[in-house]
Image (cartoon, rainbow, N blue to C red; front, side, top):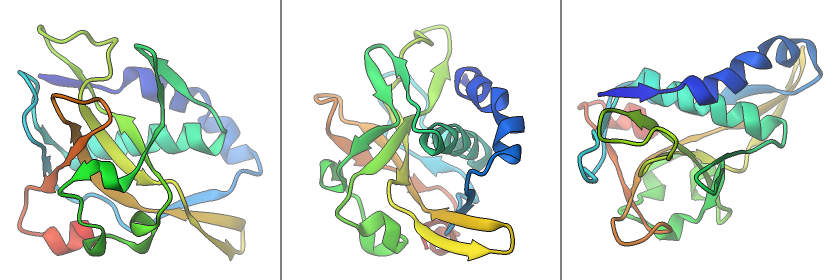
Length: 177
């Protein structure tokens, strides 16, 4: 099974030159995934996601978010807003403060490509990122600091209900804090 990042990274790659040359704020993270995450299995799709795969999706999401742009797959606009109250098993007290605010989180799909999956559909797994950010200043200008808030899987019965995923490794404190 492979995870496809071509659609998202195509958009990301097309704008990398302008991103470094423009006056867009620099993006930073209060935390990053450092190891694999395990999600509830949905149908036949895989449920273990490596940190590098998650980071690719975070990069695609923040590229779009920073330019007030969206992408549409199968009638769903991404990044999409998700309330933390819609996530079963979400543990906001174990996450950075940006993940615990009452504002919506941003969800971005992990595109799964295999023989049984239609790659034009976003699938059930999402990378969760804070919709809010802390603003800091450094010698190069403004910095927007976001937080990685985990992964979720859509519940089988609802497109607006999610189940929280968890880090696979024993290094849970580093990945969640």
